[in-house]
Structure formats: structure tokens, C-alpha cells
Image 1 (spheres, rainbow, N blue to C red):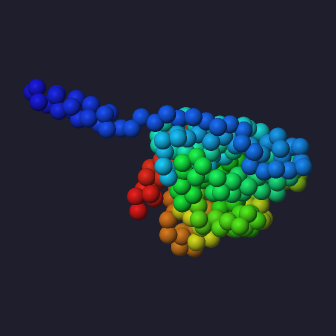
Image 2: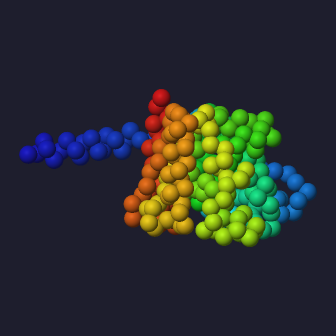
Length: 268
């Protein structure tokens, strides 16, 4: 009986001793564009959460939600102290900016990350894009439609994975609202990630809240995206429905799924 109790304690202590204790810091408000536009200079900033003890660590570029009309950059606490570098991005917002400017900001932030992350002990070969709601929409747009990153001489297929949390794949409802189209009226044009579905994009991990608790028909439209990508024979495609979680609270459990896929992809 003594052995039964002592062995777990021994191995728990061994595990704790074998883990490296990193000291993390956050460098805040780094400009990722230089512009004559005052609003761009105000919003186009990012924070980098990392450790100087890292070497070639995986990177999560995190885009906040807020319906493209609000929200502020932050480093999710579930991604902290976990041997990850997090780049938390602010971007311009509607209606002060156009939808093209919102998407371009997301592309510019990713380009900055590819070009600068080695200075923060990260690997440009291990860059994952993740974001909640509007953030999920933005990362899908720049990851699927190659023109946005091409402006910065980057191919989105060099991204390790796209991980939208409850991201819209129809034309974003805020854009529809600007055009006088109801959020309940389905609409697809070149500003819909669904319009740009392709089988050769990076691994695509779709995460949604409960289909009956989500915002509008968010789970259903993402399920359609998943099905379309399956028909296109995308080789690494996943969808998760987080039962019991609504649009706002689904991000916390979704971080676990993100980290699981980071480990899986990097182990290959």
C-alpha cells in the first residue's frame, strides 16, 4: 500500500523538477505599420508575449473579437505560461475604417510576425493564426484568399494552421448591415471566407459553440464550410461543436483544442 501512494508522489515531483520554468514578459504596443493615416497609427499595434529563454517556439497570432466594430487586443490567459509565443493584434474597426482596411491590417500583422518573430525567439515555420468571432473571420479571409498576404510577399500556405473560433464564413454581418442587409439574410460575396474555400489551404480547424446557443446560425454556416472543404478534399480539416457553450463563452474551452492541434501538427 505504501508503494501505491509513494510512486505517484515521486513521479509528480520528478515531472515538476524536469519542467523548465520560463520567465515571460509582454512587449506592448509595437506598431506593425507606418502610415500617414492617424487612425491606422492608433490601432495598428500588437503585443508580443514571450520568454527570452525560448528558442524557435511556436507562435499564436491572436485576433480579438468584437463584431469588427469593437474590441481590444489581449493575450488569453489560457495561452499563457505554456511554452507559446502569443502575438495579440489590434486592427482598425468599422465604421471608421473600411472592410478592406480591417482585413489588410490582419494581413499586415501576420506579415510583421513572419518578418520579426525570430527577434522574440519564435519560429516563422510555426505560426498559427487563431481568433474569436470577428478575429476568426479575419484570419479565414487572409488564410483562404491569397491576395491579402500576397501584397506583403507572403503565401498564406506557409501558415502552420488556421484556427477560427466561431468565425463567420458568410459575408460578415457588420458588412451586410452597412449595406442595408439584415444579419438574418444569408449573403456571400468576395468578403465571405466561404467564397474562397480551397483544398490546398493550411490545416483548417473550425471551432464553434453549441448550435442552439451560438450567435445567429454560426454553427450551421461553419458546418457548411466544413462540408464544402471536405468535398474539395482538403486533407487536414476538423470541426468541433462545444456543447452547452454560447458564442461569448466558447473561447475558453476552444483554447484547449488549439493547443492540442499545435502539438499534433508540430509532432509530424
